[in-house]
Amino acid sequence: MAAADLIMGEIIVTGATGNVGRQVVVQLLATGAAVRALARDPASAELPAGVTVVGGDLAQPLSLEGALVGSDTVFLIWPFLTTEGAPAVLKAIAQHARRIVYLSSSGVNDDAGRQTDPINQLHADMELLIEGSGVEWTFLRSNTIASNARGWAEQIRTTHVVRGPDMAATAVIHERDVAAVAAHALTDDRHAGMKHVLTGPQVLSRAEQVHTIGEAIGHPTHFEKVPVEIARQRMLADGRPPALVEALLASADTRPESNLITSTVEEITGAPARTFRSWAEEHADGFR
Image 1: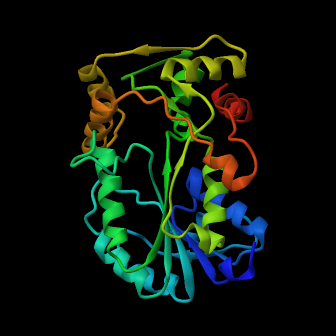
Image 2: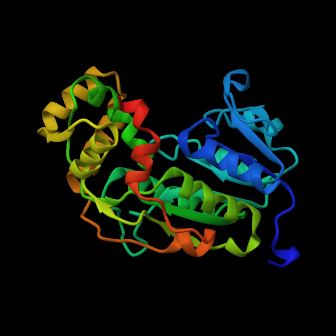
Image 3: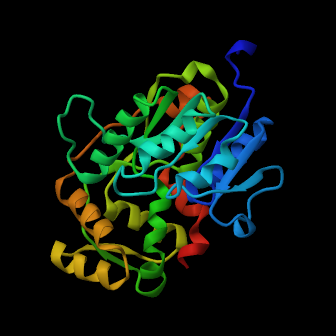
């Protein structure tokens, strides 16, 4: 890799206390990069030694000013269900950083006037805003991330049955693989302007994912599809925001099946994408 292709400035990671963002921080530190982690409450972030944790909230763009000073590149996870507020955040980033690496969705279709569901539409809208921000960009269009399965942990621990709306099978990807690609994209200019589609090595249904977790914990576990209306009632009763519930249910109802498997993880990182089985075995204790 030519030295001119390396990004030498400081990198700021949003969503740094989440499943993907935390891994991005870990893998960037392993490269020797200078890393800042954005957190609403720095005191409780519990991030690795070596990272500078700075306060800031994407919901309050003015709070980002201090965190962004001196930053060169931003890893952006957009945690909201609409792009409201995104223009102000992107304007703040553009005043300091020269490039954004954005975690998007593999479901985004560049040829579609409208995307298949609200979540893919959100990512498509964010991509357009980033492209128009004047900042260089890289999009990581990730398939379903394995750590989403943590949402089933309580059901599996208590009943060994996961009940919920079904969704089209996808090539589930380990969050460490997403983070590994992100670390390359954040530290190498040659990824500027690229749209990387990231998948795991095997297309799996929800039932197959739940079964795999059961094998990892040594107890038969299965998935039980429930009607959308019942799922809506349960999700609302669990305290999930109504807008999120509707977005998730719309995705379950309209997202098309996909047999897409890419080799992008291996091409960029040099290592094959991890299997969902490996993820389940790593996290088995959380489901027991």
